[in-house]
Image 1: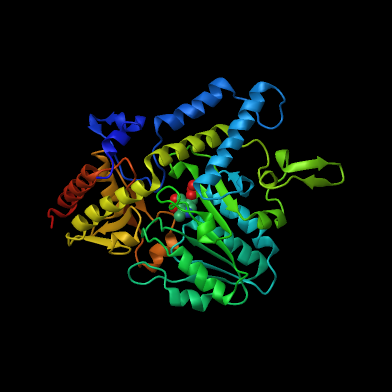
Image 2: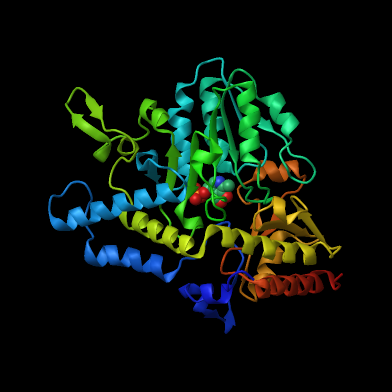
Length: 413
Ligand SMILES: Cc1ncc(COP(=O)(O)O)c(C=O)c1O
């Protein structure tokens, strides 16, 4: 072990809880991570010490809140390797960030253009584009995967052409765990069409590995605070300054204006142009604390830890004939998420039996119905790891799966 998950776990109040006298084994961080005390405390501090609006007041409390909010923007920018904090827009979540891009950049696409995505996307990165595709009557194409759940790069080269205005894809699949080779993909796309705008859904990447938007070479990148130890209600849209400047506003009113007359309005500069109304100030402050927490541990160490746990879990699960696993076989090619099925048992039944021992996994389609369709299954179980998990959590999962099989099938392999 590179660091002690049990020590890290002690920073998370919910992990000190016992339900029915048993500890909680949390294996659903892909849906939402747990929150450390420092993040919780920061949101409480805001409500106790300066629970006022930002930008609008000239009094000390409002200035303090504004300074905290803008410092958080700077911290988030630094965390994703962006030198210009004006490129960081706060939204409600990754879904809203993707909708924002679709409703601004997407809405202004020329009639002959097309949009390309992949079959492994979360619904949040499919549906907003379907809406644009339908409204503008332009094609929406999807890159296929191979039998280990990796994007087919030859298919990518077939789907992208001179008219591809947007390529939008996930950095890490929330089901298969596949880590897509973002830089290689961008290089291949740019050879075909240097004007294609690249959108990266990094909801499952920013919490788990060190990335830099400058290094990746994308145009937009989105993620959610609640998957990276931060509060719910805050998301991030990073976009290149020159693109943000050209984009029309998404929502209107509040801080996104510079001057309003009854006849017309002059909009504010980015990022404010995209932050209409009072934002989730406490949430943004909490996100900065989450960034601080992750940085204190080190993103490199977090990635290594999750890889070790994935190797451990895959090694055990792959030996079991009753288990079917989806996604790449090699842990180096995947994040800390494993989707699987226990043959002959519905995932909801598996999750229900595991819940008897407070083992929290996901069951269903994980907001990736087209991917499940592509895998020719209706649903799956999903266990995911984060910095507070250790091998004892994987062992608990395996014991729970054995209990489930014995309960429903009266046998185990
Ligand atoms: C890959 C991916 N994209 C987008 C989302 C949407 O995130 P949110 O619900 O925070 O908007 C998720 C959530 O699970 C996800 O896994």
